Length: 532
Image (cartoon, rainbow, N blue to C red):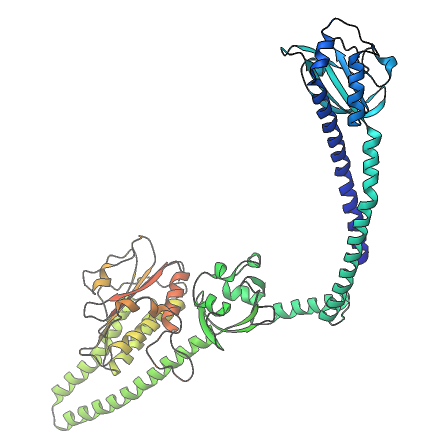
């Protein structure tokens, strides 16, 4: 097949070369005829003879000089004519004194022409120029022709040489085809075309059937292959194939991991609100194949496990506190201090009830309200007061509050960790709709930075009394893998705030950090209502 293709291409190229070669030879012949005619017309003797009043003659000086020029240049004919189109010279003397056989109007009108035409001497390449006297007056014309048989002979003479070159090129192509064929057989392990086709079909079925994302890159970092799961996890499109990965994903940790800028095994990254585990394997051609696993659910389960452990610790502490209260109550009753016992019970129950009622009044979504009540209990057992600001007001239930609960839970957990151990440890939470009027209560410099666009949506702000976040680290805290805490045994640190920002951006919002009034950190998240 390769030899047949090489032979056909060689024959086709030869034919394509011969066609313009014929035109080129014609052009050269016409240019040569025109140049001879121009040189002949420049001879002063012709103009003097045509204006001397003599008659055309086969023995006259015009005929003799024109024949000398014809023999010297190898032209087919050199014809000098007067303004009436009467020949004064011709290779056949009997035609001298007769009218020319072709139309002389163009050169007699002062124009130079070149063409291939049929005349008394047969087909020829012709050049015609006007003939002028010393004062520039038009007195005739000069026509020079080159026999077309000579042009055709040159073309035919070039064919053998061209075929020799084409044969040599064909021989080289046949040898190259043979060598390439053998190399391809070695590279494909001598598989037949049908076997290769079957392997490709199986590969496509396997890649698009597995539940792990697969992205193949070439040596220049362009996407060579992406399966269905990778398209879902990275939000790619089939038409992104062939484009640089950094251009499709944009700058960030995910692009760095997949392109190899960050090395290691089971690397964690956040993309589009999903926690992904990535592994990258280089290929022999300089590219790479990266696999992706969705670990979002495991990460959420890990956080729920942390919350459950914190709740268990809180319940255990409450159990001890409840036992202590029972002992105090028993002592007061045995001492007969009944009024003091009633006051003590009312105060103990009223604090927790007031907190729960306050949250329920301001946050009507049951999932978020329950989350805040639980976080308040856990924070209290760690010596941190969690309070709801007077600006908090969420009057409606959310369509899907789970992602907002993830954001709120991450921010409150981080705030409690930061505030624990500080003097008068406190965490303040503000949760409201964007079109709700803010309270005048100040919460630090971040309190004066509100979402600058009006409309519906959710604004969440969490401040703490901890050490705060230095200004030079207020962007890096949202990067994947960045954390100041030791990771727990069942999961890694440094994903919570990255997930918070990605979820906010996923819903058309923002996540930022500033300084609270008491010097701690103040995290603000803005998201559209429709997204939650």
